[in-house]
Image 1 (cartoon, rainbow, N blue to C red):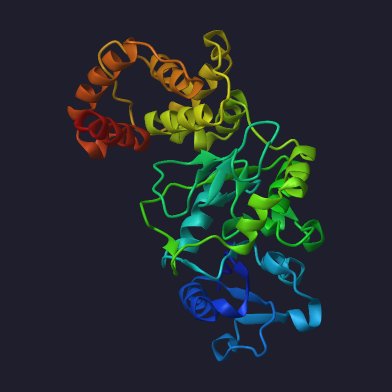
Image 2: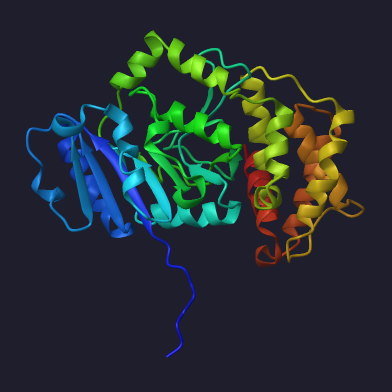
Length: 360
């Protein structure tokens, strides 16, 4: 009999919980256990281990033995598993039945040096405040395309454990797990990405209110800001575009909605616009990646890949002019003249994005 050399994907999910969240923890465990190879649950201050955690696929660690490590418990099992992928989740979020499969799929698409998530934030450089100076993509909100991030919420995170070689010792002071993972990514020069999803693909299991960690971050974020600043975390518009263009999958995915969203986020953060003369450093690489798709591009008569990419870059750069509306009208008309099954994925999203804009 021939042996298959195909590697089976194994996924370990780690989470931490406190006693007041026992019921939502049960719902999270029930949703995710069928999706993963193993699960590790760190119980902070639970007097007893809940019955639903007594399962052959579940490992339990308790604060009575290892201390109350708060959100760091999500990463406690890093050095105790041989799984290919490691996911960290929260004990109060609804996770859909395709959650793990979707994050694994996107991670493979982007490459093993990239981590993916749903809850994500962008920061200016240097970081000024942890919570008030960021542009947040909340896990419950829709996002049309892959977008780069400076920080991922560790309640919605997955990465290639074997490639990252992340150790639990890299997760420092408790209460800052998101920060420590962002620092670990920056130290490695690895990418963080927020995935595309529909509205309410994920949502809070209980009435959302400020957590203890959120309140602490609002009151005193000096330690977090110092850690992010030391790791040089934060973005300029050029750095955001560079992250996209350096990843072929993200570059092929780049479209009008992505570029507009990126430009909006940069504007909210107060990032300076990119001068038109500097956009040429990105143009040719984007054009090359767009041509890698197997579907012939559809543009208005006389428009080339280079001119289309120029439109994308201007939106991301924060440049607006009257010609953009004319381009959109002619482009939308051309897209409407082609069967949707014959459109590349990024152009299908362009069509839906423009249709929404023109009907508002």
